[in-house]
Image (cartoon, rainbow, N blue to C red):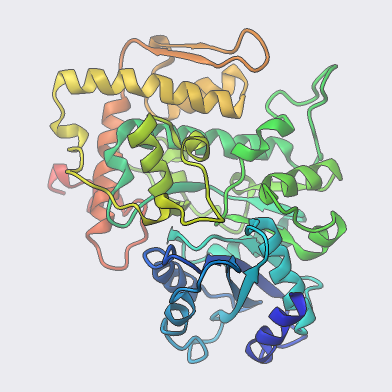
Length: 447
């Protein structure tokens, strides 16, 4: 199968210079049931707009399906997405291969097959960077791919993880306050937990003293890594034995950390640590996070919240990913009217929102297992005054956290500013999703 894929890729990668390091973006694409029809075109447009004048960018779209499923129009959809060869210097190269699998597709297996095929097609991966991406990218900073490579090269790390939030082009997730705010808490804590791993290669022991209070246990790694803002050195990937078939990102982080190799979080990075934008009522940490985050599709998160009130960190348990059959979540569209923004909410609605936010945050903390101090810090960032918050860590291993919110503090003011900024950004053609300059985004003041 690798040989067949390499044969298909070889003519498409022939123009890459062997003396230039490559950033390889591995993009598995579902090739049956028209499951990628809605999300894929936007993903390709965002990747096509990336630039790197120091490295070549190779986007490898691996269209995969079980052999028992008839192919859909995905290959034609990619081919009709424009001519990537006629682009400015520093632009990506797109290569596509079709991979029918005799067993149910396993995402890690598909990604590793793509990398093996790229190497077999003649692309020198020594000194290269591998970016793990999915086909449902919603928003990406203009320097996403160059920034990931810079973080590895300048920081001497073997793996880097940046912030990811969930959103949808048609259904703004900021209008679902409990889901949106608990997702911010997830991203804030995850960034700090990855940073705590640092260059020490720490992995919390099952017993005995723990050397770093905020370094995460390997059991929570699955809640720290998401596609879209994660990159690894190709040499490191080879040395740890490649990608595992299932839960490939979780195992990649585990394997890298277990080998004592340095990991870097976006908060430690120099290349993308630009001056953080400030907005009324927001801490610089939240403002910077929302501004620089990669946005991946929230369709599964919205389905899990609508159906079972499960926050983003638990969305895959509430709506399991299907690969052998058509995944209904990938075809699902939002029905009904969107919730109004918080500025239009009644007092009763705000009270209900606060009541719903507490269990969403508790579930998020249960998955991430931060220290109580780190949990309190994250809640303060979104405007929850710790005087009115009760956080009870689990009394025994495996037990859930408990969170109770007696008063709102400034959380509704923070949410109001975030909603206005997010919705304003959607109305400006070409604006990155995230925060516009305050004078443009905060429209309530008329300034």
